[in-house]
Image (cartoon, rainbow, N blue to C red):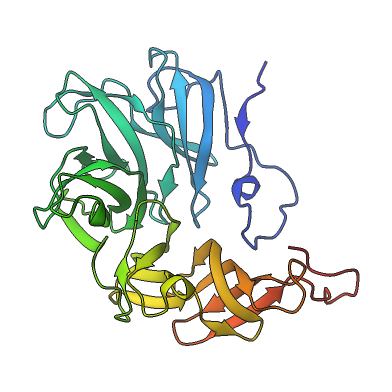
Length: 329
């Protein structure tokens, strides 16, 4: 009996402004064989499957040949691609791929997937993996040194950045500054070379303070090889009034898109709750506000920013345009 399926990509597009499909489209079934797949798909590991703009779905699944572990696959109607399978040799000859660490899977518009995985028969048993079935896989093991030589990567989860590269918010060990510089935003290129986009302790782009922890906030990416991060900021001129920010990294250089303490038409930004980054480099965020007239009924909103102007999209307590109620918190 066929009961497990990956349905229409639209079902995974939560939060995207996509039209509702006329009917559900079945992309694949379990208990069926597909060309190029080792064995028969037996289960789908629904750990945040990933969807790209081309309608491709990245997912993890076990098969009759995977010995209880999950492989990395990409599917679209009529096609299933096996990108990484338990037992595949590591790129550097050190061990074999064994399985995945639970966490977010990411896919870019070209179908390049990233995931945190682990290896057997290797001194370094965990790392970051990117694959698209076209070029060589991208691999970076834990304990890899940073480009500046100041510490090595001890933790993090990767996201596809475009151009067969990945980005991660990394925790660092062995840094010169200890807890003052032990996190960073790092990119890993197709040749496994690494670049620092931002480092805890560095001065932020507008000069007002230094990045705090970069591995504990939100990180999202777009299709223009840019990333958007939230971070605490230390040693600011306003103290706790401006000690956080929304920063764009990557192509175009580091840019401040919004700061805690910045005044908008709806109130003063107090916190960043959810973030999104468009391909043109502008961003949207949901945030809490201070200095409003009727908290907690009006101290939240959704905003757009281009780095120059923060524009209100909606605010808690405002009437819904069709007159059927008010925006909640």
